[in-house]
Length: 227
Image 1 (cartoon, one colour):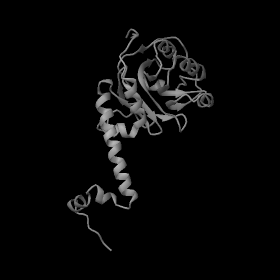
Image 2 (cartoon, one colour; image 1 turned 180 degrees about the vertical axis):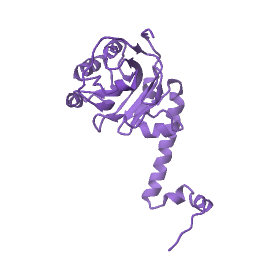
Image 3 (cartoon, helix red, strand yellow; image 1 turned 135 degrees about the vertical axis):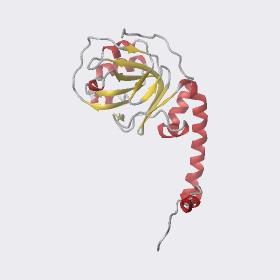
Image 4 (tube, one colour; image 1 turned 135 degrees about the horizontal axis):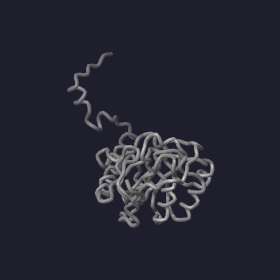
């Protein structure tokens, strides 16, 4: 397949992106009917890592990070690099390190989500550059082939379109489709408010079984209690 690079993509409203970031991965995942979550192997490089931004999608050949260098040229401030590998056997390479992070920071890229390995992790943590990856490895790469930039792809089990909103925190990474951002933000805000009310009731000593009305369900399931 011939490499293809799309220079310009539509992006969501920056204010709504900030709102999604504030709401967090778990709430957004639930608010959009438990969809968009990347596989659990995508872990933050350090516990406090958090990001919310527009996806620049990058599809790389195995063991070759040339396309990441190419993609950075088309990034804007607030974008998130989302990188997948064309073959699962190519995910064991350290595709991203300190020098790439340095140029990302200079371009205003606010984070990286990569279904492969990263290296120079001490330096990336020191730079406070948010990263979610499949692995940490010093296995080197080459720059011999080019993949694709800003095409729809699957990263860590989630469909990602260029310009979709990527939110990452300690709970993982979730994708919010760009066209759905306003409704997901509204649903997530409502969910957050509902959870705040439930939290106050739990703090007062009420039981979850009563708050959620689950005692009838236990009876319907035939649960029997014994002293």
